[in-house]
Figure 1 (cartoon, rainbow, N blue to C red):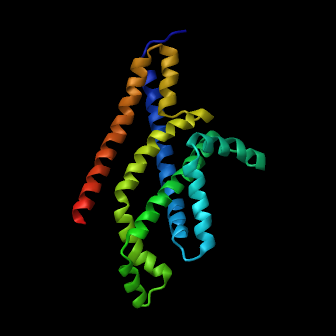
Figure 2 (cartoon, helix red, strand yellow):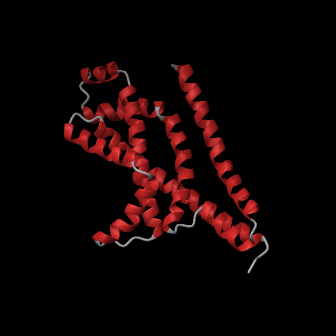
Length: 216
């Protein structure tokens, strides 16, 4: 039965938008914590940690996000862990974000002038203190622009979670389109929502990149 495009359909798309924002926030925050651990391991003096972090990054950067979501959603139950679509989508995107943010921040850490680290060592600061007070503040500042740029990609990437049954923004548009037979209106609204979120972030990332280039 074909339905008219009413306020109820707008609310379906709005609920999908809210789900996308929630999933993006969870994945970005969780991925940020994981990425910090990965970046520190990637630059650690212990070779085993560097190799493990490198393998983690290589896997998640070398495989499609869609496959990673499948592995989490269908793989965890094999080991006795029952997960719903929310947990699977959040975990899959968090791991994906952790690998990419870890590599971004690894580049920032290695971009800090070596003299800064040597000066901190001369002052008697240990590894943890050097990272906390000297290296990481500068590295995160230099990595801020690409981090915001990755957030834009992560928000758009949440649309892939629909493949495991997660109803986010693009999936809600598909549902509305299938019951109203007005795909142009439904997906036009979805596109407008993505644009309203991602365009300001993209511009902000570009502005930060230019500001940092001028500062250097």
